[in-house]
Length: 183
Image (cartoon, rainbow, N blue to C red; front, side, top):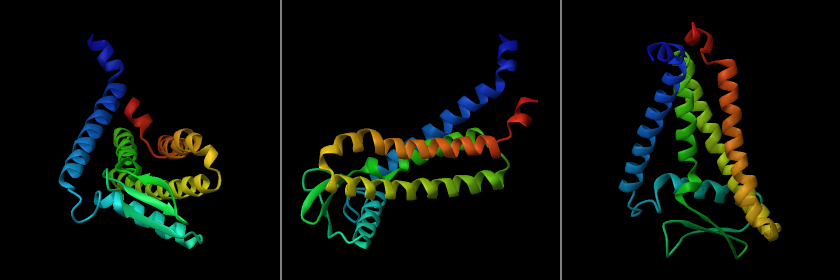
């Protein structure tokens, strides 16, 4: 048993570190959501920020955008040229994806400076890709409503998770100290 533990210590350390960071991040995010009562920023600060940034980007593309609090649920209604197209809910703010990304990066940590820089820059990139993803989804839904389900259910999750996966692959191949860990 001890020989197996020694043989797979790198894998065990990765799994335990990943799970620890993911659980801590998820619990912290849950507390954030519980503290966000929506009185100042509806439905919560980050989701509201995502909505406002999507609204600004869509307006810059020439669409007439309204972002309104949803009366029946904690979300924002996104209306383009008078057509109610989408809801921006807490799950649209990319924080859960960023927590997953950070968990992996910490589990394959390099030196502190490089790891912190990659965590910050990767999180910002994921957030930005998420904004673009929402804007493209809304534009596509406006012009091609018949494809809304496949766009929202398949194509656009593939964008955010695919991008995160590419960031992971880049991290492992470029920065992670795998050789040192295996020695």
